[in-house]
Image 1 (cartoon, each protein chain N blue to C red):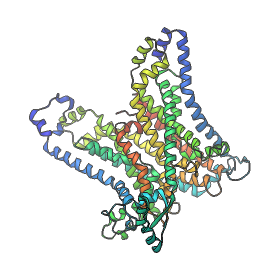
Image 2 (image 1 turned 90 degrees about the horizontal axis):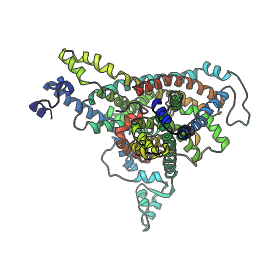
Image 3 (image 1 turned 135 degrees about the vertical axis):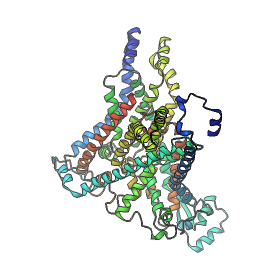
Image 4 (image 1 turned 90 degrees about the vertical axis):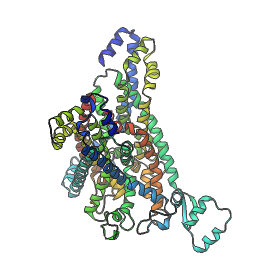
Length: 332
Length: 307
């Protein structure tokens, strides 16, 4: 690309966009070296992620191999072990079971590891809890956040700066600090270890974030559109629904996804405010052990299932990541 | 902002003006009520508890003890230890992240084939759940079949240190994971700062035959500084709050080598004796520290937003 560039000459005036140092061959070489170093570093930083995928699919008897194996026949033992409760079979029971013609796929996978499926594990229901709680709290916090963001963006509210400041400062509190009184509060209200209790808490936890981020997005929509609509006889509410909402759709989508990730990943509140009924996946993952001591392939499967949605979403969100992690302060 | 609202209300009939004001109230009040119930009220409640000897599992009403909890905390070495641990952890990880993140941003600054996908790939770790990340790094650090020691010393992996077993290396292990997770965050902010530097500054410097070092010190660094500052402040606040990662990776151990203030707080409030009153006092001390740094951070954000 650079070569054609030199042959045809700059397409734009030099003062605008041509870096003088780009032209020397030495710095072109430096550019290539930079690209290589960056790629290598990025690949190194992905080793842990690769390792977790590897471990999720390695058969149980090869997990502890030394040196660590990279090439092996992938197996679903970890995944099945994660979602089921199983027990180790004796040699004779194993032989008898092998001859059983009515084995399901799941049974057969575990049989290879010398195990028998005896029921389903709590992890599946904990994942469901995570989905329900993250989903419901996200809907609520984006809804309330959108209303407040619109009000803060469009109207002259006395003390708006202080209010916004207060709203964000609630987000900065360490979770453990807020949990003690909320734990007591929930206990006396009967909200401890309930879905609704955690949903409301996550709603508030994400609300400040969603107000700040959405306000940034709404600020960017020209207010002339609404003013024109108001002149045409729309009420404020109609203008909000029919003009602002469609324009803010990308912003709403990005905010929703961020709130989902935060709620999905949240650990401290879930650890201290749930025990069984409403327990989500993050506090449950460290307690996955399996039936025969620490089964790393089972743990890795649990980790992998939990992480896949986040990785997909990160790629989908890449344009808005910067904005999201700085509470909408930096937009490019 | 004020002008438009006023202009609208003066030209519109009175009814609309009223409905605007009530609309604002309707839109903001639910948010404020939620924040007051779940944040403000609990804070006052725990302020009260911090002056009592209440325990959540004792069947006894809270008893007023004045400043006893605070003096007990401030005079006990184990509390100071957790503050020191947290401080060491914050300084080590934030400074490493700053240097590495800035360096990476300089590498990725000029676009090359595949630089977009590489940037996104490096960003993945920071979106993951710290406790889950801690859990899988535990496998990576495993002394007999983990890949960390194997990569450090492929010929004799068992000769390498078991990172999670000794106090100093355990702290280092936690810092490594935190740096792995959050360097991309610093990089992301630096990249945004770098892309905003106008090219003509460098052109002028090149024409003046300024050295690369001079360009870096006089152009790059000052231009990126505001965003770098945001990154450092944000990471410092998060490091002072850190809880999840240690819980997943070390559980605060070995001994109390990686026991941050948050973990100590958790143990005090929810394990053993459930010393709710004393834990609330500790929580308040942490709160004051975090809030004062957060204040600087939010004011800084507000200033950037205003521009």
